Image (tube, rainbow, N blue to C red):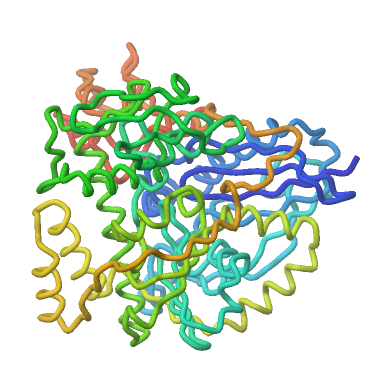
Length: 538
């Protein structure tokens, strides 16, 4: 038998299919529960790569890729083709390419630093040369970026959802850690990427997890809230009914005892439930212990809700910015496409109520993991690469750098005030008027929702799904002048760091928050801790 492997390199983890090349059937699926590099978002991964070097970051990523493909339960000696999709940073890490041109935006920044902008076009490469444990001669198919800021994953969500063929104004968003979004107005496409943070993927949440068996993925209201828990086939099934005011189970469901955590969509549903029950005031849950208790001892607290609200705020600020750049009103935008795991499992009506979708959208299409789907399409038909390159060349894209955009900055500040400080929506819109930004309309009516797939990875294959937890590696090193006080170990919020008896620093990369934290380095009383001097464990 001849095999192929398709890969989605995401900010929150890696997903893979094994495929029978004779008929194109998916045989098995494997996913990781997080990313192997330190950090919780794309900027953390980028900064880590810049600080420690491309070679080290590439080795850590490839170690995980090879662990994933070994679990696909196919003979790797018979793998002939590999295809991959992801954002430009993740694909560069996978291929071992420099990321300087992605880290420093703008022609002036590139000239000042002598940075060469890489062409990230479609291409066929050697899978062995990038470090995959597959036979010599195995071809690696890489789809194009639209521009160096707009990656193949953004192209995938446009291509697979039907967004590009839509004649009316429409918006598409991949609801993940690095939320890619695109607004189509006539022949013009406005794109952006909001660092929404890991809460959308169920990460940085106390009992958070990616979408997988045992994840609470939604809440359904029937006088009280019913937990919906993903079963072994990643399909939502009824769990327990709960009273969040009293934090007690009122009725046990078929999935009682089977919940292991809560995914990002479940957290969004909890935000909607908290708003509906008036449980969220000025950045805190107002019930007795500041928790919303679900089933099987799974709960979220005020910090978790706040993390989700930051993600919602970043999404809404991004949507606001694109609409303003395009020169249209929200009322001119009626069609929404949702991609990614969160875009699949989230209740679209609740999502619109809390602000993850523009309030004007009355037709909502929910798709799954379009990045992995497009990679699999390429595996079945490698000539698709040429078509995708042609599409990428023809897209008239206007990319907006949200990090430096004044509209995004102003709206995001207001979002934080709205969620954490109790700013009213009237005051929110008053500030909009002051800064010559259109008001945010109220949510009205019930939208038409079209669930195009039952789960984010529609076909798992006869071999089923495997979730890989043993990923990442260890960074190790000795710090000259270290006294072994273990202050760094005590201060690590993720318990990713250990100081051994001989004063060696050991950090588990998958657990480390990286440059977003550096609490280990900042807490060192003798200022001898140098994170960037740590080396990959051989």
